[in-house]
Length: 93
Image (cartoon, rainbow, N blue to C red; front, side, top):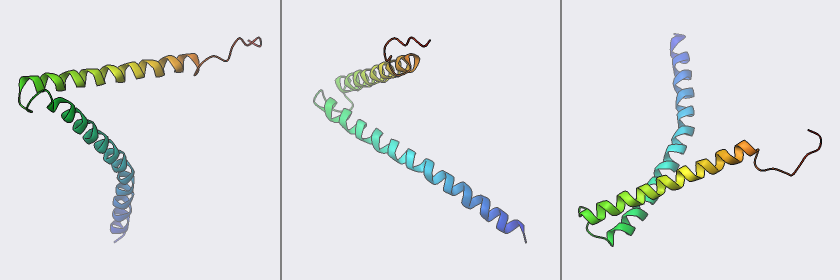
């Protein structure tokens, strides 16, 4: 008899935790859908979705986005190494 309340508590706790993670996934899915729609609209001017020009356009757009993400990560890493910038020379060190 005690097993049922314990199991119920575990299930409720797990589902509550996944609810928060689900919000992140929902937000990410919405962002991806918006990017996909934007990329599609940009590349439809090049040709039909199955045409070689469209496929090449989508590859180029994806490659540019990947490069932008890498550059942003490098910038963040650089800022992190510098401690979010230098405030000038500190004579106390």
